[in-house]
Amino acid sequence: MDPVIIVGAGPVGLTLALALARQEVPTVVLDEGPGKEEPRPARTAVLRPDTAALLERLTGTVLDHHGVRWAGWRAMRRRQVVSEIVFAPDEPAPVHIAQHVISGLLRAAAADQPLVEIAADSRLDSIEQEPSGVTAHTRGPNGTYWRGSYLVGCDGTRSTVRKLQDIRFPGRTAVERHAVAALRTELPWADQALLHRMPPWRSSGPFAGEVTARPLPDGAWRLDWLLPPGKDLVTPELLVARIRETLAGWTDGATPAYDLLDTGVHTVHHRLARRWRDGRVFLAGDAAHLLGALGTQGLDEGLRDADNLAWKLASAWHHGPHEALLDSYQTERRAVVAARLRATDQALPGLRGGGGLRHIVPGTARGHDALLTDGHLGRGALGAPGAYTASPLAPRHLEGEIPVDTPRGAPVSDVRGTAEDGSFVRLRDRLGRGTLLVLLIAPGTGVWDRKHWVSAGVMPRLAAAVTALPHPAELLVAESYPGAPAHSVLLVRPDGHLVTALTGVRPADLYAAAEATVGGAVEEGVGVEAGVR
Image 1: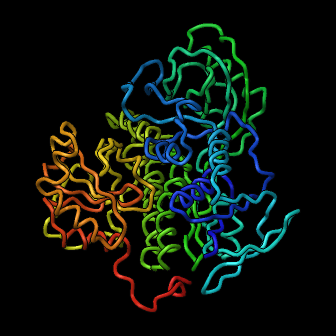
Image 2: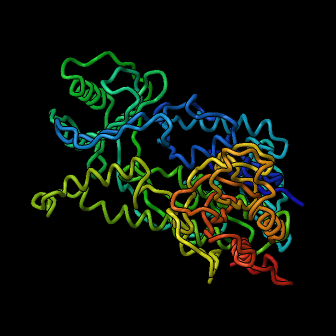
Image 3: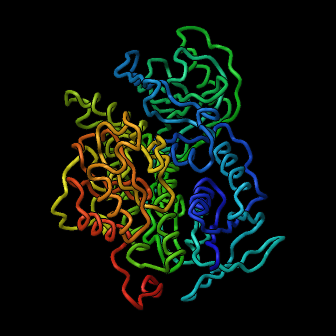
């Protein structure tokens, strides 16, 4: 069967290619550029624990060695610290890392993966779909035709794929603007991120009263100053003056020594593509959505797009197209991103407005600080990973379903479990293989040797039920799971979202849930034409 064509060799496109390769699906990545990304220290990303874990699985690299895992977070208003969070050494925390470093790690992993081919200097200029596949043409030094089973546009804001498919991309322009500087200096809080609102020093030039500092490796920091609405020019002289003023304010004295590494102006747009699927063509990442105001991170959502789409494309590639499963990518991911955009757009007037009730309602400023903290830390409506609660893949009418601390459709907690061979594994490390995960909660199994429990109690019956599922599945056993009673059984999707939790071993319920998760039973004669719009 033909490979999957991925247009765009940024972090989202490379992540998708590696995720598909992990499930034995070949890909061709069409890279418009020369095959490498120029270093830009001021162009960085904050990765939440789930997306950081995804990249670590695919690259085999611990991101802490290339970025900074935040030791804590503090929010200040004027001269006061209004909130402070310290992350324990073993507690999941955001990782701040330069985007060119992410791309370099992904490219290195792709170079070692025989199922991934990267075609440099290949600019897409046409797409033709047929019932059996997709043909793409590229121009440039290596211009040629490429034949694929599916095509995914991961080609960014000005996506050629989106334009060729005539997909509208409505939204808002310049929701926020930030002046950005990457510099090496010493600040009073090592490895802690800071949000400072209304700093007491006198600002100069077109700057609003908010600045964020986020640590990078080797004593470097990225500083972002919120700019007021409009198109006021940020000159190098104004930016340097603001840097010196900010650093002096934070160190209560003269400006400390610093080495300026990079500068820029970051403009945030909010847009959402009308369609994310057109037959055998899909959109992901910035080609499908733009967001990023109030501390949220667009790359996080792009990586989640890739994680969601990879196992569904892999299933279609290996077992034939299943329209309900492929359609669920747009339904699930677009709903999650749309909800985040709505939450951000609703919060913006109060947080960025120039007057109104925020000056007279008690506690409003504190609520604003908490909301911004949620956005930066990946929590709440602004930042938490989305739950596919209304997914068309959600099972219906399971008599044995029970509630646990993870809502149905939300990402599961990363607990330690025991694999069928007796080895101890983290739940997240077993994701992304294209298989469902069945997790039995059995206190004591982490203490006793596998030979004492593998053939005892409910294990033989559960193992038989897992073998009979309509999709490949792996059985894991864990001592505990948040909110789950002993002997309950959790079904987890390949991308780590909870399908259901059942009380005890219930083969019929488990089978029905697994069948729903992969789109239901395949109807004879249904082909990809059903997905063409």
